[in-house]
Structures are given as structure tokens and as C-alpha cells.
Image (cartoon, rainbow, N blue to C red; front, side, top):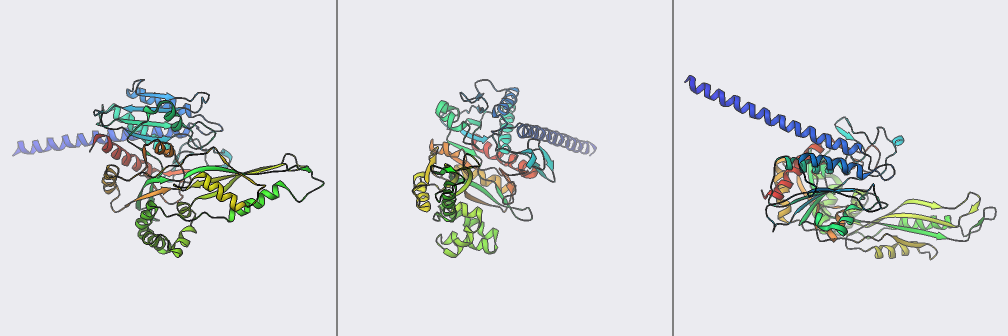
Length: 470
């Protein structure tokens, strides 16, 4: 009897030791991930004052320390753009017939003026359950998760069935930079060629109490296209005002654009989204979602939904004025007045169709409407069982009761380049928030600490399922 007790005690102590060692390993890995994340946020990659190349150099160093060779991890710096560097890496799969999986995140951010922020935008600050910093959410959260995963897989000696490729790229946020995805596709497509890609574009919806309600999976996105309105006339001395003033004419055109609305388009993805989210949201808004899920042309329900800026953006092409430039001297009549419109175009609609609609709305031949840097549209990828089964499995374990909702992203991502190249691209992060909470591109951008860590766990499980076939 005493021997049996000692044996049981030995097993218990051994189990506790294993459990303790596992917990220590987990804690060390989490600290390593936080270090990667902090480094990324604190390296300024904005177009005005930062460098993407600095960040990817730091990322490459981490990969090299984990054991990646020069063949399997390297920088791609576009010719003539030394600050627009990208990082690509791969872990070779055992099955050469199986197409690779690509994990993609952009590492550039929009500008952030320190004077406008409560905290330094390029210092990672943890406060009240949030991480604050430019890029804390968009998109250094996923970039850090993917780099961390590549490091851990290499240190584990992983040999998946499918090749896993990673690309951390520059140029997603601003048109003035070289877009890394577009550049690599043109110069060395094999580095990122894949059967499908996982990208940003969808997170998760929290209820007012913080309960996870819905995990979104992006299956389509609008295309960002810039247009300009421009008026040119002879000008003259400001002491002799004339009726035909370029600024006034442009202002009148902008008022017409303000009052113009593109037609509502309920895509199959959006219809399914409303159908699943409606019962969760509840109230008048939820009832309207449910109604549109049943009948996409319901006028009363559409009126409710289009009154909400977020849902209106999911239901139609939108154009909004974002920049103005006019005049050349304070004492001269303006010879030129120019406005920039940021348009988010529904899939299936062309830039030329939007241009024609704007010209019709403006209805003034002296206001020239032009397309700036024409961007090619893309189509929505199919949500196959190959994609969704691992998502459902991970979601049911981590957030039981939360629905999985396919979604259309109102903002554009680099997925448009991959989709046009024949690489199906899906947005998923597993990072939950309240609507508008993260304030991406805005002041004091943030993400919930819990959401970031849960997103890391979710993406780890899903990506491993894809490449190992679990």
C-alpha cells in the first residue's frame, strides 16, 4: 500500500513538474511575442517620418536568430525606394503537390502627429486593458502574430505538409509608396504565390458587456480609388471679382457630390452577414438587418441600415471629399481649384462607372473629373470548407456561442492584388472589439490586450490546421 501511495505521489509530482514547465514555456513565448509587437509599434513606419525597411531588418534578424537561412528569409527593397522594404520567409512543406499557404500583413502605418495624441504614438503603452500606439491594431497586431509564429515553428523544427509563406509588406496605407505586394507579384511572384492567403480585413464583434458575439471572416472588399475634381480659369486681380470663381464653382460641385448617393447593392456576403448578425444586435437595427437578410429590397429596413455610416458603407459605393487645394496668392483670383475624393467602390463596379456617375452628379462641364492611379477591381473568394472548418473548430473552442459571419470590408486591403493574381484571400484575425473602438487611422489607436492575445492563439491554431492538415 505504501509503495502504491509513493507511486501515486511520484506521478502527481511529475505531472505538476510538467505542468509548471509547460506554463513557463508558454509565459516565455508570450513575453517573446510581446517583445516583437512592442518593437514593431515603436519603429516608426509612417510615410512622413518613418521607414518600413528599419522594421523588416529587425524582423529578419529575429528570423535569422531562429535558424532561417538566407534562402528562406530575406528582404525585398524596391529599386529607388530604400525605405519601402518588405520581408518574406518560408517553411518548406513535405508535400510538393500541395499549394502553399500565405500569411500576409502590412507594416506601414498612416501618419500620427505627436501633438494631437494623448500618448506618444510610437511608444507602445499598456493602459486600462488596452495597447495604445500607431499600428497597434492596423496592422502591426497581425504582423507581430505572424512573425512570432514563423519564429516558433522554426524553433520547433516543424515540417508541415504544406509550405507556409509569410510576407510583411510596405505601401498598403499610402499611394505615395511602392506597394510591396504588387511589387513582389511583378518581380518574384514565387516568393508569395500560394493556394490561398490569410490577411487583415475582419475581426470580431463584442457586445456592450464585452461578450464575443460574432467572429467575422472577410470574403470580399471594396476597392479604394481616388478621384479629383478640378476647375481651371484665367483668374485675375482680387480687386475685380468676377462671377466665375474657380473656388466657388468647385464648392458648388462638392455640394452636389455631398448630396449624391450611389445605389444600394446587397451582395450575397452582406445578406448572409445581416441574416446572422441581426438577431445578435437586436433592437431596431437588428430587426432591419434580419429583414434585409430575408428580403434585400426591403425599403424601410434599408433606410435604417443606410443611416448608420458603417452599414451604409457595406451597402453602396461611397465617395467623400478628403483634400482641397486652391488659389496661388491671397490677392489674386484663383486660377485653379482642386478637390480629392476618396471613393470606396463595390465589387463589380468599375472606376469608369463611378467617374460617369460623378460627372452626372456634378453636372458642370467646367469641373473636370479624373481618376488618379486607376486600381483594378477584384472579386469575392468562396468560403470553402477547406477555409472554414479550421475556423469553426477554433472559434467553437475559444468563443462558444459566437456566430461566424462572412463580411464585406468597406476599406481596401492588399488582398485586391492577390485576388487579381488568382490567389484567394481571406481576412481573419480573431481580434474582437466594439464597433469603432480601435480607431484605426485616427487618434490614440488602440487594441484590447486580451483581444490581441486571443487573436494570436486563434491564428496559431487556424494556420497550423491549414499547413499540417489537422
